[in-house]
Image 1 (tube, rainbow, N blue to C red):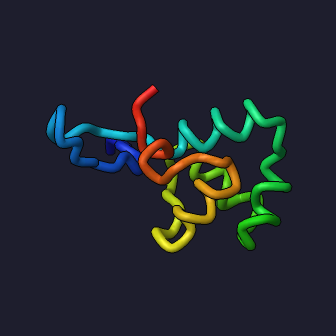
Image 2 (tube, rainbow, N blue to C red):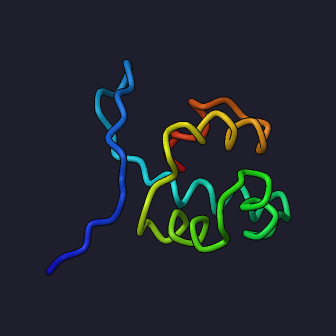
Amino acid sequence: MIYIGFILRVFDFEKGFKMVDIGKNIKRLRQERGITQADLASALGVTCQAVSKWETSSNAPDIALIPKIAELFGISISELFEEN
């Protein structure tokens, strides 16, 4: 069995469709800001295990959490989905 993970296909008007691993972005943003997985989980009302699964691409955050995640990091939703 080959595990692909949760990588989102996002449309960019300039580049067309692109693949984005939102978990990598969440991890990078969290670490840049010195936030622990526990703190992020608490702020979002999820478990530490949920945040860990996002960051390892084992799962993706619920779509309803995307605006809150972007707000917590002080970025736009578009920036959350940018390739790095």
